[in-house]
Length: 367
Image 1 (cartoon, rainbow, N blue to C red):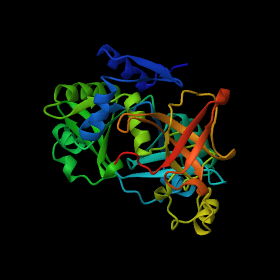
Image 2 (cartoon, one colour; image 1 turned 90 degrees about the vertical axis):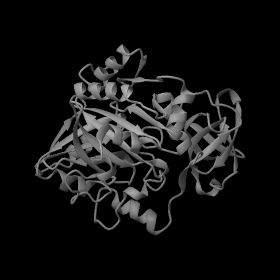
Image 3 (tube, rainbow, N blue to C red; image 1 turned 90 degrees about the horizontal axis):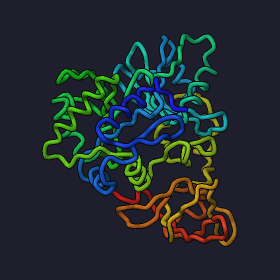
């Protein structure tokens, strides 16, 4: 059932009035594409795109002990995160497995955690589990905010067009409040893939609608597109970006998912710390997230897709698509260390005895 109180639902309704079509996914709605997929991908790689990412989970934390609690139970050091600071941190289980990858924003009097929507209930329950005598309140914030993302090599210049010189004054992993053209929002500057900064716009519904309208009317000479989920999914697989529940779930740990940069081994204890440190210190990581190219497209969604070498299971495919850049079927998979070497040949175990050949490929597919 789709919640009509969710600000993403209401923003999607606005986008539908502009002529874009949506479809439901796991209790929320998304726009699959705004123009041609090839045009959107071209803007992702060579221009600038605006995405509605309000379908992400947004959690609000209140209370004087919130930062200290998150510091104690997640992988990264956040206790001293400054006001208007941003940091990625991972909630892991006692076994060191991934519960949720989150982005923490410190508003001083409260904090926001942004995560994949499917992880939001798990992350909220996990935080509440460890609130004992702490002064911490945990709230679902998707009814308050919309979240938009501006990315691509022209994103910084485009953000300057919208927000002024504040963009150049900001350091990555920080945010500021912006009031321009009668639009009020928080501008969040993040380190993106391919060493290119990207930006989030956090606002209420009315200001988000004004911001979208303003951006679409001021595209100027930029290679600009609105980007839907179809083009972004192709792009994220080409870039080797994991998402929940495909690559990020409680079967895998931060080492395997190549998220170890979000683990601070010097900060002291956190939930799962002993297991993650043991894997690091004794070189016990047994599989990694890698890319695959396929001999044929994969068209099944029937459960786990296993990878084999001469009948022996060596890994699991987690995402797949057709790369517009490589003009080839590609995917992401967790594979045993013994089979990680590029060009290693594997086979997919598919229904009805269909055989698809796979070849290991370094990530990202496209640089």
